[in-house]
Image 1 (tube, rainbow, N blue to C red):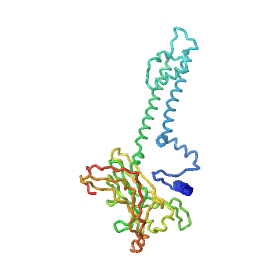
Image 2 (image 1 turned 120 degrees about the vertical axis):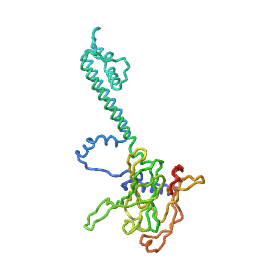
Image 3 (image 1 turned 90 degrees about the vertical axis):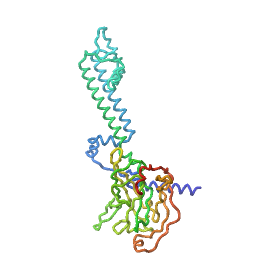
Image 4 (image 1 turned 90 degrees about the horizontal axis):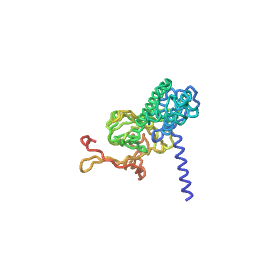
Length: 373
């Protein structure tokens, strides 16, 4: 029991260390910090305040939403209180019976605040009414109405902008938790699976990858996060994909590939991070979005292949079985890329796959039955 708890603790610590060390998390967030920024650089966030507001979290949006309305009501309430005080309308000023107030039924700070709220929100209960005897009060009600309108427009636009962010569309596009290396089309390939969980298409989808690693130049300069292009494609090409069903991306490991120097035994000893990107435009909203994920050497399986997930029923409909989305099976694969192209030392992986049952099966409508898949 003690050993099992120690093993669980060690696994948890190892996962946390890996999470902190990787630049891009599995869900696409960038794990990077900015330090020693000058005041002028921070002031740029204030200048671009709209993007700053759209990017902050919902909890702060709600807090600022409540604070902006409450503060504006209170500030104008103080001004209405000052106008009533200047005109002698307050109850403790003992106005005479023939006194002409600026605002009827405003005789204290609380009633001034209520009048400010009713004015800005156009409630109009009828208890507190502006009189025509104070020109300053008439001008103030015009100013408050305009400012309240600006506040309403700003928050309505901000909430709509946050709701329609392309990031939300990216949540319905998922990558496989692991990548595999196995033969495909007489070549050794690195393969990744991606799926669109919505029926609406991603128009103009483009796939590409970047390998991030630390390199040392011939001059002795150490480059941290050196980026190397990794080309991905599917059998139909790499641009303008028909992304209605899950696709298997593959990168050909040839002499120009940075994976060419790796082999089964040294893969886990490498220090790199493979970041995969998918750019596209949502068919229903016409908004562009980018989905990204990353793979470290521990998440790349050499000598495995993805299980098929698309089948056809007796009725002629296509079925996508997402229970096999992350399942892999061992396949005979060369020990290294050079061995593969030289036809030497085939390596057989262990006979155990990797399962992820966190997906449900969905049925693809037979409207695409005329497409050859």
